[in-house]
Image 1 (cartoon, helix red, strand yellow):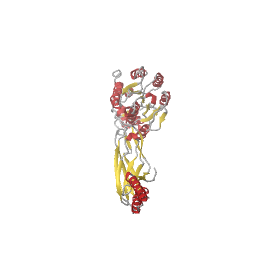
Image 2 (image 1 turned 180 degrees about the vertical axis):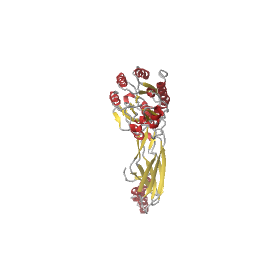
Image 3 (image 1 turned 90 degrees about the vertical axis):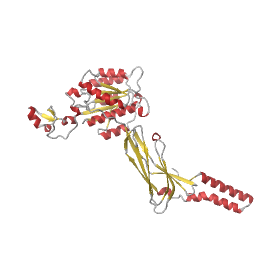
Length: 411
């Protein structure tokens, strides 16, 4: 930003008034009037001289609380402005923080007079409604002379990034889809510390680590028993989220793509909380994120793709190392016949439960509503639920778990 002085309305008035007085004095031959005109004309120029070096004396720092926030929640921005000079004050200081248009109008604060070594704190809040990485700043500082004839502006410092993660809904701690296939809802138990007093052992299976044998239960049952938490550590799940721009509809937080991302984040975090090693996939391949924070960060900046079909996504999911009681979960937008073919072939090639979450607000054509796609997927062995908003997910997820315990009840 230019450091050249910008005259205010008062400054331009004094300049024009002084010039008029000088011209009038010369025309009528009145020296006193000329002198007065020169004085009036010089006032804004002298005022500009008082601002020399002022921009270089301003320093600032910025903090975000929190630096990572879920969409729809407030984040607080704290800005500290200081005069670094030891002897010279700063007057007429005004600061404004630059913000993306989606976060609203840039806040402006009149700091006013700032003595040498003085510090002033200002704060404001932003509420981003859509996930993403938002640049906060840089700070624009403007300085005015004591007569308010001249104002100089300068950008100070660099911006900070506010990372906005997708909103997450809590899923019920009931049986996972597919839990009944292995004889009960053991997946509801969390990973424990693994002591010899673990009260929930299970029968030994080929490939189990013998170091996990629970000897007290082995003696009681007359067969090898191992601590059940070892089983949890072998649970590997994969979550596929459809990021194709053509498959989704709507804008802002209510768009079907944002619903899909929120649902994928909720399911992935739920599986991680159940002790599953969970991988995230899109139609472009695997996203390098398996921990809670890393997964949310990856989804925060995930962008739409121009990919037409789900063939690449199906290939990525086919290669996913799902094991134990792990699930393959696909959160999907609108599906074409080719997409359905790729998904039905995928379910037939896997031994683990496959769950499809269909976003009802996606770009479904009138001739192929989500109910038709759901029927095709169920026929191919997928467990299917339809959602309109992330808030629909908990009840639907609970229904899928109950359907596994009572086949036919939720068809």
